[in-house]
Image (tube, rainbow, N blue to C red; front, top):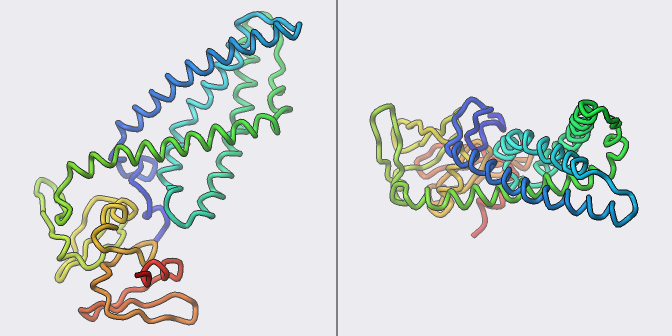
Length: 279
C-alpha cells in the first residue's frame, strides 16, 4: 500500500479535498495579510534607505516586496497540497520533516529566480536596470528568510485545518455511528460493529463481522476521527480496534502479527508496535 493512500484527500491525488473551500479562504486571508505586511515593510525600507543617505523612489521597495509576496502567494497552493499529502502533525515526524525541508529549499530557489525575473521586467518597462540574478547571488540570505516563511505557512495551515475540522466533527454523525454514503444511499454503521479499517485507494474499507464496506475517506482522516473510539494504527494502511485484538505475535524483523478474537490475522509494522501495546 503506498503512502499516497495514507493522507488526507487531495485534488492532486485524484481525490476531492473535503475542505477545498477552506483552502481558498485560507489563501485569500494569507493574501490580505501579505498585502498589509509587505506594504508596511516597503515603507520601512523606503524610510531606512532615506535615513542611510541612499534614497530610492517609493515604487522600488514596493516592487521588491510586492514581487516577493506575489511569488509566495502563487506557490502557496502547492505548499498546502504538499502539507495535506505529508501531514507534519502525525508520525513519523523525521521523514516528513526532511521532505518539507527539501520542499522549502526548492520553494526558496524558485522564489529568488522568480522575483529576479519579475523585478527585471518591471525595471526594464520603466527604462531602468535591475540584475535578474541579483537575488540568486543573495540566496543564502534569502533562504534563511524563506525557511521561516515556509515554516510559518505550514504551521498556521495545520492549525487552520484542525480548527475547521472541530465544528465539522461536531456536526457529523454521533460519535458511536459512522455515516457511510453509497451513491444515493446512506449507511449508518455502529462503531461497535467495526473491527478494523484498511486503506483502499481513495477510500477506506470498514471490516465488520461480514463483508467490508467502502467509505470515501483517507486513513489519516479516519485515524483522527476514531482515535477516541479505541482504534489504533498497526500499519500505515490499517487501523484496528484494540478490544478486538486477542494476541500479538512478534517476528524476527521487528514487525508483528495481530490475531483478532474472531480468528483473523493482520500484519503489523514495527513502527506502530509501541502505540498498540501501550496501556
